[in-house]
Length: 181
Image (cartoon, rainbow, N blue to C red):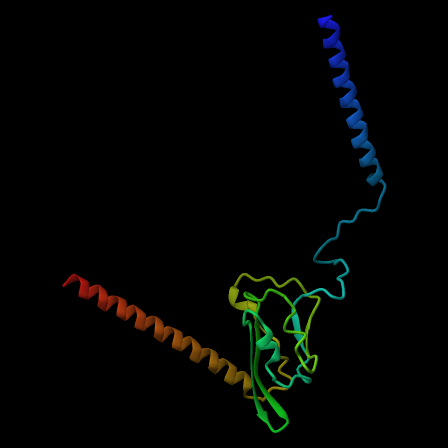
């Protein structure tokens, strides 16, 4: 009696193994003759939906520098600066920091001129974090010396940061010398 139950259990286990293998092979067979869906990524891309929220683009000619998009951004990653000459705008900068941006699309809706949009580009990869501060201006409406002013502004900012760092280090050193006395 004990031997027959062991044989029955053994045969049941063999049958379960064969049955589950056939179920797996049926699933494999179903996909075996289908066209593969692998996409060779850099060369080919899958279609992107119309409402995809990717890298921003700006229609600079339409923009009136109302700052609505910058105010609507919940994390303040949009910075824009322009000088108004009557009805003409002289753009200085319109940057978006993708280190902070959460692609929420809240900057798009309040724009009265519908000039900032979410694009379909998604591959924004870099080895350096400073490259994620993206300038949306096309330099088309900018004054000739605007590039120079942008560079000067960046240099001034870097000098201020260096001065702050030097002052902090000097303060730390003076506090370090005062503790030893």
